[in-house]
Image (tube, rainbow, N blue to C red; front, top):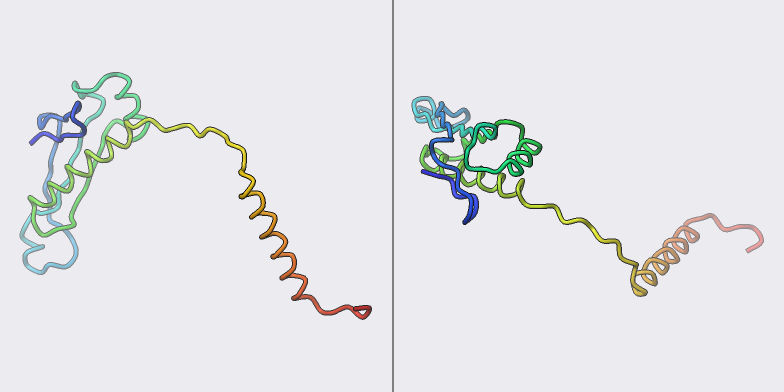
Length: 135
């Protein structure tokens, strides 16, 4: 089933490689017999559904392969669904442009609060000192 990253961007099933293995941890005989651990791999370099700009962003963020491993649940189907959701979320995050911070000046209230906290801190430290003889 294709992975929908965004309304305009879908990773086709043909570009995804799934591998199922036995999951470790508790679960007794079920864990020993059932291959419920899912490894989902997407080759970004050879993908045909992304632009060169997107390819560059994804390779900078992940490298040439995006690998998702899930063994959270006992069900293989549920682990596969979780892996697809995580892949979509990580690709969506990598393709979202980072907003640059615009410097702003501190407000009058924040300056007043800063000076007031410094004054209180100084007063508290003075009270911790041993009294001097001339006091």
